[in-house]
Length: 407
Image (cartoon, rainbow, N blue to C red; front, top):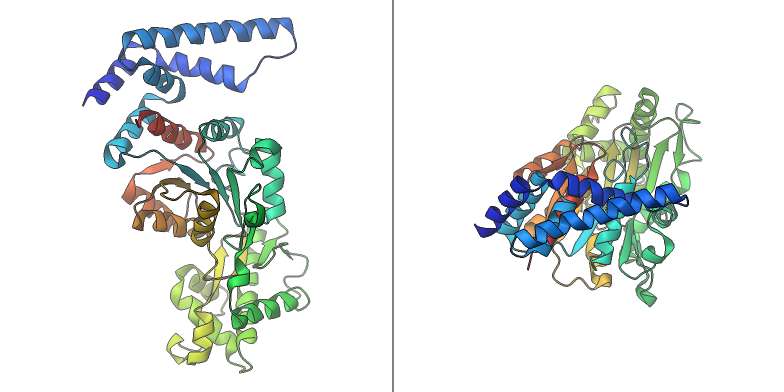
């Protein structure tokens, strides 16, 4: 109980909010060119040092608690201590989704906040590897990662990018392991399905979808995205249509039997209530039962995934290529042999990573409050690290505080 007592003293006897505000000012608003700005920054920095010194002198292990005051709110610090009591481990890798997790179209103008970027830099300076785990293409991710974190950090050898939801892993600075193309491990029947669908997906677009969707520039996955604002009514309409179209293309790639598209609809409708709901809304429910699917067709269907992201994307991917597989490969390249990761994400693809971490007792899961229901259920049943939309910094601060508390 000593550490709980010290936290009560820290946040009860000292103005920790003022310490944290000063630290944020010093970190996020560095000295500017004008003498007045420089003078003000220096004054705040001097006062921050004095406030930390008072904590250091008053508390045993004062360096640790002065830094806690500067980095975490009272609630974040106590949550971190609860996590330390439960797990007794520091986070030794960050696994981070980007869209609607680190950044939010509704709350952060689709930019990763400066506070978040600075916290990631702090973790990096402490030697904690960063795995960016996203459905986006590699070039997109590399672009904003370098812009936000800097070329030196991204190419430090301690950052890995899992792109296209596990299709490949890019870890600069690791020689022949710098880029692992995980889709090359798939067998020929699965690869041929993807070649067929990709070869037809644009040329055979129905008139109702032309001008409304585009093919994301993936290396392997087939992803249709809306030409409208994500989440809008127009985006919902075209993505719902794109889902039905993608299922039918898949069915035609699986077999020459005319029932192929109906079998593909039946298979995924049985497994995903969201897909079943879209098919129902569009009067496109299958006439076949999933049990009627021939064994050879079913065996291939079991190797592929059709994912639906409401008013955002319809995607064909491989079962063996998911974010969890990509994260395992990234941690292997990074040399994280005994992982205890912080997984932050909002979608069903992120749930794969969260479930892997929970099943293997190798990490924590956190999610924004607008995440998909399955993600929220998992996070609330584990460590309840649910944060407001656009506020990924709050969980990163909690994880940083956890690491400060671990001896």
